[in-house]
Amino acid sequence: KVLQSAQRKTRQDESWYAKKNYLNHRVFYVCPNKGNDDHQHGNRTHPFATLHRALSATRELGKSNAHPSFRHNNTIDAPRRTIVLGRGIHYLKETIVLTPADENLTIRSASGANNTAWLSGGIRIDSKE
Image (tube, rainbow, N blue to C red):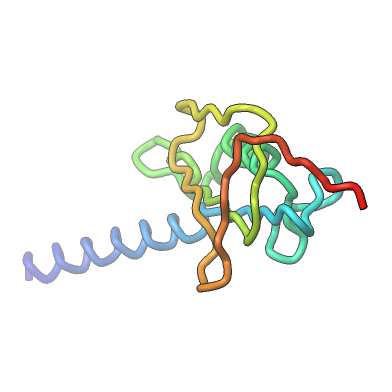
């Protein structure tokens, strides 16, 4: 019975962590061609235009403490955040600097064969027609 009780307790803890991690995770999307940094929310249908704006949004989220239901042993875990880079060239106007505030942040390209994302520190030159 002691072993069964310990196993049940372990399953409850695992369930709590799984729920916490799922609910405490936010994904921001960036699309260099269709995004907008001024009027978008950074979701899949209304992505940001730049990585800098998405990074700013993840930091804003990190400043607002996790929901109280995520407390465990009187601590609050930093929210997990992901930035998904859409297809295209993402021009960086300035250097990306990650700090301890960016803990639990993942930056990745969108999945799929045709969703190649490029980060470029170069300057975009538009051709005149």
